Length: 141
Image (tube, rainbow, N blue to C red; front, side, top):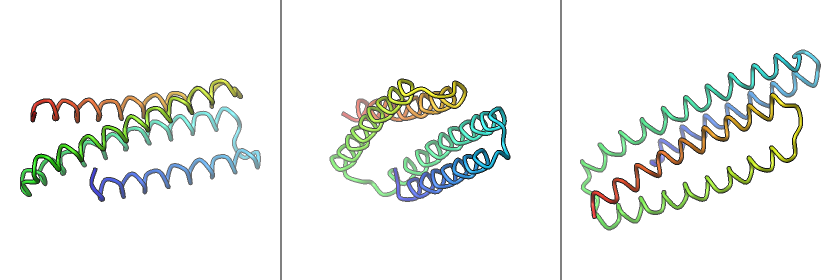
């Protein structure tokens, strides 16, 4: 992933966390009912995952166009892809641990289910990126 992609993801993450904090604050002030909070978190999670997938796809196409123009040495490109595969595998492991911790800890059913759904969608997106990177490594070697 390029610096542009990381910047986009960081901006998305900051916006999502800011909105979650705002929703939590409004819920604490009793402005939002539990149902409204659940619906808002579900909508936020859906938008977050959708935009994240679009960022991954856009960055991947930009990266492929850049790689074909710059003619990066194959060895360095392979090392970089392997590094991103490793980072993705670590991210999946962390997300699985967080998913298990959230489900075991419990709490209100709807927020736990929304969080679990978002977590599973992020894991699926990262898995798809890893599979594509591995497939591209297989075709080059």
